[in-house]
Image 1: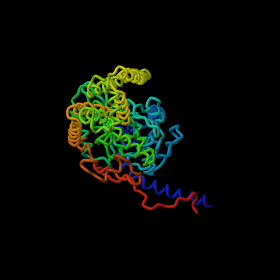
Image 2: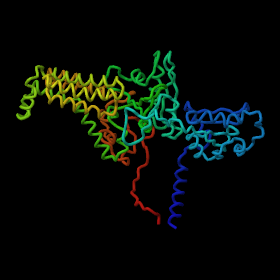
Image 3: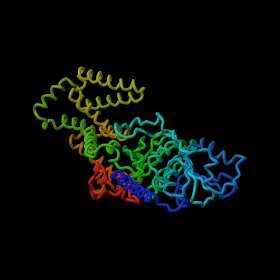
Image 4: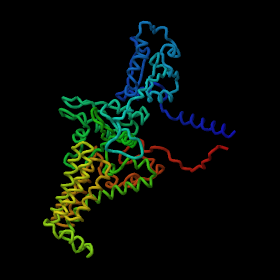
Length: 514
């Protein structure tokens, strides 16, 4: 008996949930929203105005099937439009099994976002036919696996170079007509198709207008990749820090849209850029959200400390051995002195030699085929490092420190930010060789002042650290549980601050209803 009770209870809950899933009272209201997106199409099947209207998302349907199974039927000379008076007769005309006749707005909204075609006999009819024309093969290819943002847990589907496929993949993850895509063509010679994606009712209008205006103002001859867009539309072109987050992952772009950010991608590029972005966004990995929040926070903190070690390890080595060797314990000082007693160079030249060697190996490995590049990086690092120590060009202690700093830099999830971190070491090394620890402090002050002056799409780059917003710390250096992070970041100024309603009362979970 309790099985029946549970089944009935679940059915009522599902019906209640479905009844609240849509906010559209009529099909005209639904289509008014869907028409804001450039990939939504609505056209008459016949020459009779307002008669036999077909509506669908062009990025979700199989156009070949639509032409062969639906449009060809209505364009056939054997078809007589005047004889079609009831929508139920569609099942007799179109040779497809998956046809649903309904006037339920929730079902219409759900089905059209799954790749169904909406067919109305008259333009204002509420009762319509939903015909399954979903492109089941779109995006499900081996070529769209992520390469540079790999994660052990979570989906591995990434963007491809086809913009239609990318829109399809995003719509599969965010099934709402409020997801809007706006198309712009840029490049006087390339005429590259660029799409701006956002969620209406969530994303702040100012960010949408700013991004749209910057893209429309581009006066460039050719644009091939989103990294070019990144450089053209960024707020400050003189900074080494990336001001927009680039990603090849569908889930990361979808999460950015849910938060209230704008996503931009162009035809021919497998990367999307999101904005406005903050400094801490670049140290967040999608895997953080697929692990328990304690583990996700632990790994994120490891990532942050690894970045700090990567930046300051070798400058500190130069400063201490050049100016502050008295702070080194005697036992360690003897070890350092023994390792450097045959090295003819000062610490700054020793460090620069090893750092530039590491960068040379990394750059050479990136330009070679994958397997050859990996072999070169491993073998070259071992051989050159060992030979440098034996030739007394560097000390073994510094070799270990440089290797650890290089390893720590690989923990950064974003490639562009990883390049920035590697670059920051060199000015700090020079400052440390001139003024010691004071030089490092001066370098840190320069970096901090520069960071606080940066903006991404008009929003502060260092928020929530500066300006200080304690309410937004739930997903920064650490990640709180989902029950504690049910609000969108306030610095994005979203139209809807609440993502979902948290459970205020913990109910006892029973296997069976009694």
